[in-house]
Image (cartoon, rainbow over the protein chains, first blue to last red):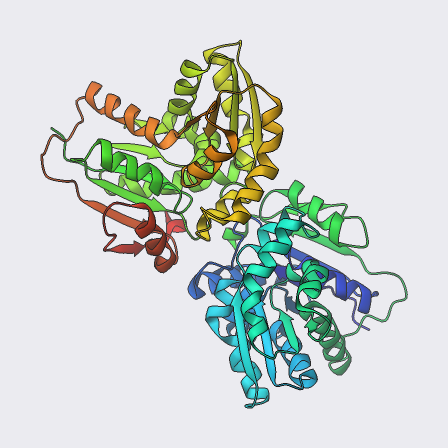
Length: 268
Length: 268
């Protein structure tokens, strides 16, 4: 029984979809969430910058005595996970591997689609990883830069969003994909709309769900589980602008976000 | 005759619409442009953060021996211009005052519309300033968070963008506005589409154009003009990701962007 919290971080609010899955699947765990709202978005930034930002956040989370860290951001996972794993003694997991493994297991056509931010797609990490799992797999990827701002605007069930989805995803229909990885933490909030467009033949893989499952296995293996029967405590930190964060969190999370503090993340 | 460069900065690429107007109206001036592409967008960040970022950029520009600074970003103008003017001996001008003056002069109905980012609208600076100019003026403002990502995606003449414009601006049609200030440096690139929607009765005010005009007057008054007949030299700096910057600049500017260097802006 280890009651130290799990550290979860993202470039902003998107990682809350991962936090939500952890709350559901590991209800006894305490959690520290950090959203880098001062420097969001990560999706259009370079590898060096993302590594620098991620290191600062990890240093901050370590001051909170976390027992494991979840990089709840596809871009940071793609560009910084390896470095973070090398540099830290506690387990650090990302959101790419769990979703990729599930997609590789479930595909029959061996054609997998990936939608994500520009940086994640450019990193090629989903493709590399899926091909390592099964060299027969063909990966069709597409950057969808407008999806995040549409989600943050709250237009998740909207004619405009449907049109943008059609614009980005119509190319994917030329390939016989049967799995589509929602490779950005905002995208599960577009799940219904994307599902409608892609049709029933395409399974949507939600890395947030798969990551929480992997985290459970990891905590069990390393005997780090918090087995308390009470619900865990959640604490939220951001690098800027608490109001927008709380408004978004209230839409996504099953519980109220009471206290959110601002951290000067550049000083870490 | 003063051949020191003019320093122009923005949160990213949007300020290039201001740089473009300076190139047109003051062709002999040398210019140093800084785009804070690592920390873009500013539109959703707090006042303290924007002031901190703007101060760092001004410190960087001063190392380049600039004779005047143009804050080519509505958010930074709204939240940081006053501080920057107090702290510096060289002239610092923003993009809000020049457009507001033009709108106040041209309106007959005394109803002026302002579209901008969330932070600029929240700051209330356009409203305050227009009311100071003429207390009879009614200001109708609207934040349009999707306009910037749509422009950066290149969808400036597009059915989706037309629909988003209609969604944001239909409220403005309930007021008898005859001037609409395009209060974010990206928005002049949506000028045609916004003009089509608002109709001929509404004059669109482009702060980039008005700012370049004000800059000319200021340089003349303070005898800082560069009267050379050759075209000025332009140098570009960004805090991250040169490729996207150059691609956008090539769409906006009348000349090729050859050399762009990355600056570690947090160290200033």
